[in-house]
Length: 134
Ligand code: HEM
Image (cartoon, rainbow, N blue to C red; front, side, top):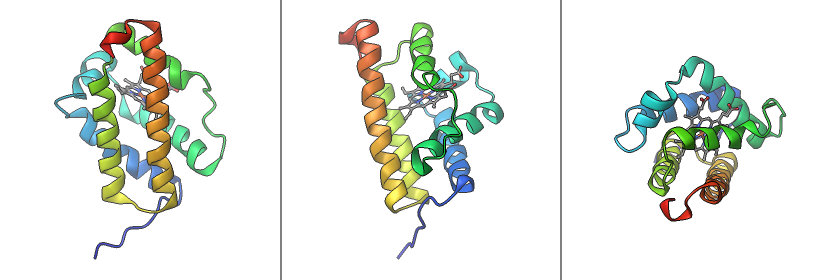
């Protein structure tokens, strides 16, 4: 049986993020948002979102950008409309990556929090624009 460890430290989060972004960047549903619209430099972006997850999973307040986590997506939605299918795919890929690498309390917490944040984000984006499209 495949014995997986839980997410234990920052190194584990970094590994999770690189693996997640490796698949997002080439994904047929969501990849173009990152490569065409956001044109992300992953060496800059990944440490930021790893900070975000370190803050959530280990209650270490290293993510200091507060409302940026939400606002970034409102701005992005002005460039490329974020739809329900994008969130569904984002969550699918995040959970797939988690399942491949880790299992345990922190891995479960990451899944739960990703679902609640994605739902909140979708609701707030829906209220900003045309609710029927998201
Ligand atoms: C449709 C789904 C999503 C897409 C397409 C998406 C895309 C992006 C992009 C392109 C950026 C970088 C923007 C920039 O720096 O110019 C970003 C930043 C970020 N995203 Fe997402 N995202 C999605 C969902 C989520 C969810 C569900 C979460 C949290 C669970 C999340 C957390 C973050 C964080 C923390 C940042 C960094 C914000 C900052 O600059 O401090 N994203 N996202």
